[in-house]
Length: 347
Image 1: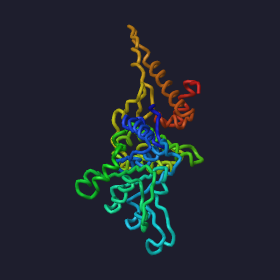
Image 2: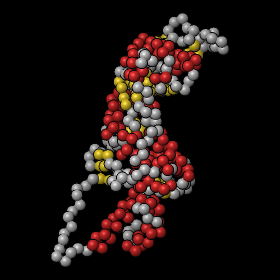
Image 3: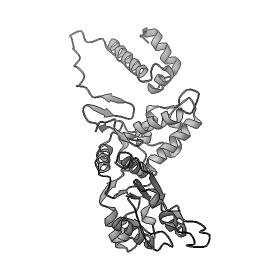
Image 4: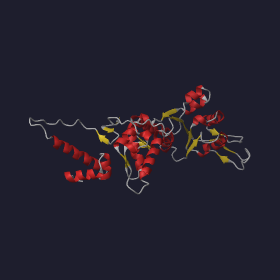
């Protein structure tokens, strides 16, 4: 799996994400075993489930998501298992449930920890017997679905407290996966920021909104209780409020202005690449030693040469856009243009 790999809209170069991508690829090929995805809210559990489905032998079937916490208890049973005509007042015709609708595909049960014990027993039957019984039906119907469940809760603790069925837990957790929180993979934050900026800028007709390096490094210092979803919402807000501008540290909402570390957070990548808050660079051998002479060295010349290289690299990274290059270098656009003209740089 390469550093640029991803599944279903997920991206990341951190060791945690690369390991997750490998696991997704592995479990997707099976197509049968149930999977339990655990992780905090906003970590992309549904994206993981969709990626498994889309890379599995069941990809031609439906991917049917059900949020067990969003549907009232009295409706969840009929939504999941369906009902026959006359099963209750208002049931004027039969209706298949989402389990049957997922025939040949994948049923994704989000927030499974909120499912009431009575429904847990019916779900266990689906997993054990591969059949579903509609509300009011006298016989069960065979089904062929793969079940992927997800929760932000600790199901083992719920089992110990008697809230969640132990037999159902072990049926679901045949293959457990963990969605890592964003605070544990801070080296992925610049990559995610770039993705979301591109995503939201695409909808605008004016110049793209950017973030300066200090802002990015500040965001790497934040704890992200809302995880990737919170980051996505923040970038959308910044693109809307600062259209076509380079967002500086002081323009971030106050709670995101963290103490900026002396060095950006770095994640080791396969090969020689490393990711920093400012850019993605190729790690090279240490810079060559300066050749000293009795007369000393040309300090100003060396500094000027280094400045030239920084300007050209910034312009290369921004596709020649001087405004964005100036933003990367923390310079005014007019200052950068003056330097380019004065140095007669080939741009």
